[in-house]
Amino acid sequence: MDNNPNEPWNMKRYESTNRESAIAFVNNLMLRCEDAAQKYREAAAMASDDSIVEYLESLAKYRQSLYEALYGWMDALPPTPMPVSKRVRSYLTEHWEELREALIQSRESQVADITDAAERSLDKYYREAVAQKGIPKDIHEFLNEQHQHVMEVLRKVERMETVPMLKNNGFNTP
Figure 1 (cartoon, rainbow, N blue to C red):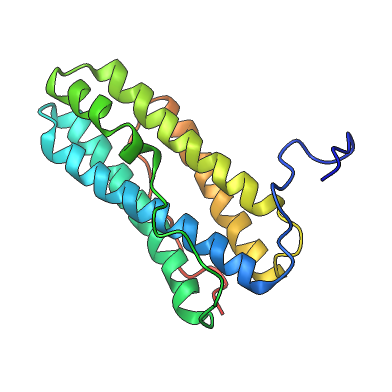
Figure 2 (figure 1 turned 180 degrees about the vertical axis):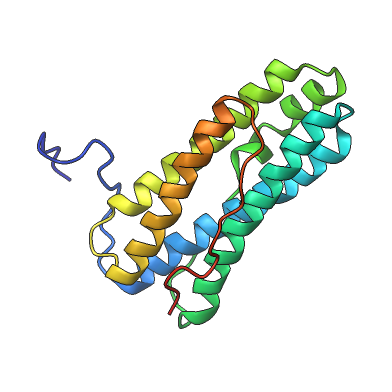
């Protein structure tokens, strides 16, 4: 792959030239969101500060709403023979012990740092998804709409505010 200086900074890692590649991308994002929603719920159950519990629960609901919208697409799309990673995990799973320790020790700033990094990681995956070439227009528009919401939520996460769920889980599903 040539590095063209005129390409966007978030240029694709590989060519996505067909619907099957797009389906794999949607599936991987879906699995990341589902995994993160579960970890945020577990973290909220461990937290002792009410404001932290509310914040983590809002993140769990937000990620669950992303998951449900992505699941709607996956459910409506035809099965694909392309292998998709069942091992896709969220940033939270990879850094679970750090988050767990921060919650046990009531270190709010470390909790904030970890949740910020988790949402930045999701933003990165959405940026990669919308930068892919060859993704069918309907799926690209759907991912772009979700990415706009992800970026809005990221601004709230930076201030450790409760975050909104995705307003319209359906967007333009098939």
